[in-house]
Length: 340
Image (cartoon, rainbow, N blue to C red; front, top):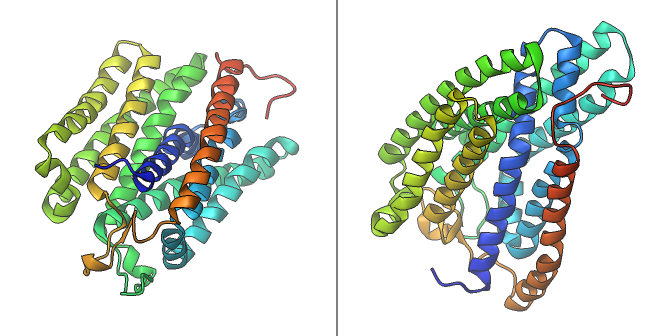
């Protein structure tokens, strides 16, 4: 791998989207589990577990999308036009869950809160599923013509493999969110979440195993880099060890370590995905020669260089803000008059 400006921006965009998956992933997981609680106080506790950080977490998605637009505009144009309906659904889902968090506790009526609870949970589930399906389609390949434009349909994106990746993503976020919820709660809700977390871990391991087998059997180009560069198997091994360590640490009550292992699993999964599509950004199926790569879909070298300077200033600020807000709101959730 040659570390030119195009490769550096490929890595930077990957880091931003990985940060989003790792941070907003547990937000979406909490939302997916939200309706399993029946008590109003428990639902408020779950909302307040993510309340101070959810909007900051989504900054990583906005920043990643902006970086993709600036560094690889042709990819942005092709993906956003080809996945237009799916992206609109994703946008609506993210808006609904955000509005639900803010509006739910504005009125005391049961129907009012139930309505926003459903919106929050449905938006979280649909967001995770759509993100996973999009990732699955990038891995599988999408039809691109010789002009670099999407040549498929919305229903064509709903192949079995991308849907399986979508379900696996939901399972991953549910596990990630359940472990985070265990760290942030106490009492009966804490005990409930411990039981749910173990079920989510099992669900994710089963989905991950199915996805891995399907990838090996039906998406051989997504394992080519590892086959050609055996040292990359260390990343796959790190991923397997991280996943295996989650139930081990959780069983011994080391919730923080289990959460870190879940973060490591997300990071290594995203690293494997990025390494195996490199240097492609959008793999073309059935015509690989039409694929959009980091070279034929990028901005000019001067643009990439100027943006790298800006990113060198902005990304540390985002990281510093994230670290600061998590430090300020560390510890267990306590409901008071200022809570959601």
